[in-house]
Length: 634
Ligand code: DP6
Image (cartoon, rainbow, N blue to C red; front, side):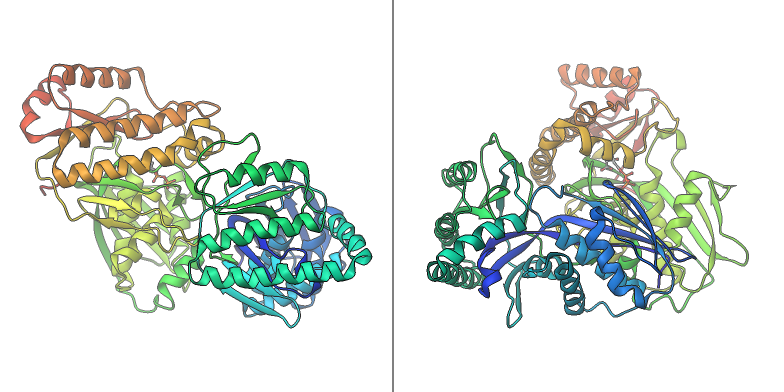
C-alpha cells in the first residue's frame, strides 16, 4: 500500500439505448475526456475524512456514517472496509459539474472503488472493480444498468448488456458535439415517468425498446467498421424513438435540429434519460450556439492511476536494481519558438498543445549524481542549498520517484549560462538530472522514455533531452505515455539567438501558477490551441524551407499571443518590465529599417532575439550587452 496516490475515472455519455438497457436490451455508451479524480492519503489512525468542492465529511472506518452528499463514496467505502487496516483522507476532484449528465456518480464510484482496491493491496482487475462498483450503485439506486459504470471502468465506446452481462469495448473515436439544455431532471424521476407510460402500453414500449437495443448493436457494428455516417443515421432514428417514449421536450428538440443543420454533424439525439440534460451530435460544430456546448471528446481510457509514481513504475518496471556509484550528464537549455502554455494535467505536466523549441547548444546544465550516506544534498552552482529551499524541494520530491530502497542522493548541478541571462534552468536542470539518473542506475531507457521522465519534472524539460529543433507532441492519452519530445531532422547552422537581459530577479508568478490562472480565467485562452496549430505548421515549414521571415514572424507572434492570453487572465499576468517593451520597439524599428531580426519571450521579462549570422554585426551594434547563442554550432 502506498502513502498517497491518485486514481481517476472518466465521465460518460450515452449514445444509444439509455432506457432500453434497463429492460434487458443493449446500449452504447462512451467514456469522455472529463474525469473525476480521487486523491488518497493514508492515515495512521482509523479516521476517514472526505473533502470535495461540495464540502467535507469526517467519519471512522469502524463505524461509517452516511452523508447525502457523499452517498456513493461512503457506500463504496463501507463495502470494502473489511479489507482495510487504517483510515485515510480522500479528496474528490471533478472536471465537470454533477449537474450535467456526464455520469458523476458512476465516475466517482469507479474511481473510489479502484482506490479502495489499491489501499487494500487487491489486484486491480477491471472486471472485479466493475462488479464491486455495481453493487455499490445498486445499493443506492436500486435499478441501475451499470452501463455508465462500465464506461467509467473500461473507457472507450462500450456495447453493454445487463443480463447476461456483456461488455464489449471499442477504441474507435469520432468528434462529438455535446450541448447542455440548461436543465436536468433527476434520472430516477424520468425513469419513473417512462415506467408509468410503459405500464399503460407494455407491448408498444417493448417493441420500441427492442428497436433501441437493435440500433445499439447496429451502431456498435458500424463503429467497428468506421462507418460513422451510418451511426449518424441511427442517432437520428433513435431521437424519434426517444420522442416516442416521451422524454423529448421543446429545448431538446430545438438543439437536435440546430445540430442537424450543421454541415459536419452526421446525426443528433438526446443523450441520457431525457426531459432535460444533453444532446449529442456526431461530428464537430462550426458555429456558436446560445446553449452551452460542453467540450467533450471520446476517451479510450477507463480507470487510470494517474501518478508520477505510476508512470515511473510503467517505464522502469523493476529496473532500479544495479547502480554505479556516481554518474553525470549535460543537457542544453531550450527556448520555445511555439510555446507551451497551459496544462491538461498538472500532476503529469501534460500540455494543452504541442510546442516546438530550439536548444541552446553549449548553454545548459551539467549534473552529477551520487549516493549520500546521510541525507539528500543539493548543490547548485557550487553552493549547497538548504533542503527546504524551493529549488531543492522540487528536486528532492522528483528524486522521491526513483528511490527504490530508500537511497539518498547528492546532486551537484551547475548551469553554464549566466543566471542573469534569465534562461529557464528547470528545462535543462530536469533533463540533465534524468540523463544522469539513467546512467547511474543503468536503465538504458530510450530518449522518448527519458523525455517522458523529464516532463514529470518540468514540461519544457521534455524538450531538453534532445538537441536542435525539437517538437514536444501533446499526445492524447490521459497517462501521458504519448506526450514526449522528438527531434526534427533539419538544422539551421546560421541561426543565432541573442539574449537581452532586462532583469534577473525571480519571476513573481511561476509558470505552473501562471498557466493555471490563464487556462482558468483568460477568455483569450480559447483561441490559443488554434493559434498554436497554425504556428506549428508555419514554423516547421519555415525551418524546412529556411524561410527566415516566416520563421521569425511566426515565433514573434506566437510569443506575443501567449502573453495576450496572460494579459486577459484575472488577476492579469504581466511578466514584462518597461525595458522589455523598449526592446520590442527597438526590434520593430530595426525591421522597419530593413534588418531581419525578430524576438521571442518566455514567462519573464527577458527577450531573446532571433537573427541570422549575416546580421550579427548590425544586431551587436544596437544591443551591446547580448549573450549570443549558436544553437547548431557546439
Ligand atoms: C513560457 O516548463 O517551466 O517557457 O511544466 O510547470 O515546469 P512547468 O513549466 P515550464 O514552462 C515553460 C513555459 C514557457 C514556454 C515554453 O518553454 O514552451
